[in-house]
Image (tube, rainbow, N blue to C red; front, side, top):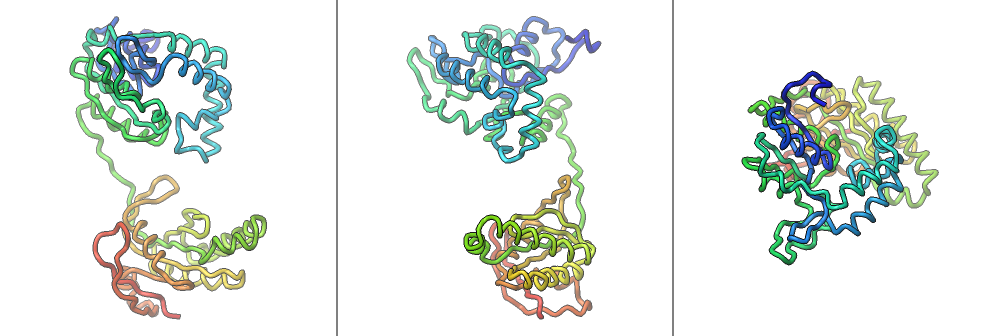
Length: 370
């Protein structure tokens, strides 16, 4: 394997059952392995008579194998491997394609049968000399298998914490608990996993230079949307939402803003000018009256973080909280916005001090007059 890529020595990364191969490689060829990274891996997957606790007994694991084999190639395994992406159809389709390209359902069954049949690498753990990093999730799908903490014959390892067993039996191994998250290493925790690996390999924590910029953030939300949706029915409500989105986007374009995303019953947009953002919010409110819709809007200006096409940061959080305080038909802004648009001709009415959930301190808010 190493010869194929013309590498004499390497850091080996093993995920899940791939950790078994990584462990064997590190034990048999210590001179070729300069580091070992194990992600949601295990030395043995089933319970053992000597008190070792795996994920489950062999019968249960065989049942799980049959369930996995039945949906292999469809992407339905996203329920187990990446629950945070359950509603992401493109992710599910990509996972199914990867499954189909990697092996057939029959091959999956054969590999899993071999692993379930007491495949055990515990005896070699203490022989591993390479510096080792163990990363492990606490995943909700393991909870039904993790009810037993102890079994006879002195077993005390917690079910579902197979990575902790590895770390405790490999000399000098470092263990990092990833908490709950997707078991796929390229799922929701990919950046965090890569950061831990980079620090382990290089000795330095990666320097993150965020893509940040100053912007005015606008949130809108349809007032009493749940009741209206119930009264109109799915089809009419969907048509009304489409008209809402089209009219909102028209005003955002008119005032040179950027639609970040539709939020279901509202929109999230950014502007590089606070006065234009305020006027856009008022224009959206007025444009939706003809549809029989009433909205509330909230705005704040601050630094935002660019996350692909999405945005994040405390400024986004503040704008969202301001919107929740706004009254029906009201455009509400933070003190920061009021100070920045001084001389613009916009008038505001003081709405007093407010505590915004999750935001430190007290915030004075103002409603746009007119």
